[in-house]
Image (spheres, rainbow, N blue to C red):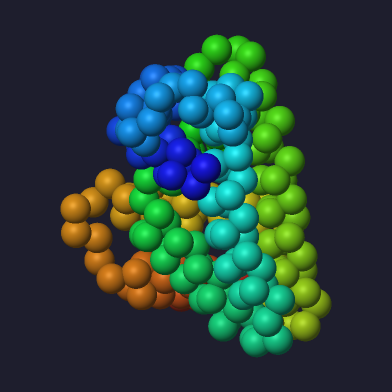
Length: 198
């Protein structure tokens, strides 16, 4: 079953979600198409299970970082490192991850993909928002809307992953981790200014 899921990821990485047929996946796995149906009801179930297996591994790493007793800065560094390292070693999975976040295919496939992915995505934002809220409460970072800041952090780090996956020779992961973490913690202004009250 794992080899079928790995084959599905490779086909999706090459051809995109809409073009990843059961026949293509079977050919990639080196099995008869009928063999896949012994394990999965249809292509969408194969894709969903493949996604669930891989995303669980990523979330386990991120959860470990989030639940640590470290300072917020160290926790943030561990979260971003876990994300970049995971997608560096699971490059094929990234296209599946993106395609479920921004569904392709028929309207029915898009609805099914949204049902699979959207609740998880929302829960991850809420979880990150909770980490940020606790850091605000402890005085480690300034107050802001924790949900929107979590969204900015998750989407910003995803954009860096997109770039890294598309590059033949990306910079060391530690450089991108430093960039993301330092920008979040310090901002980009040379001389931070307080906004004047209106």
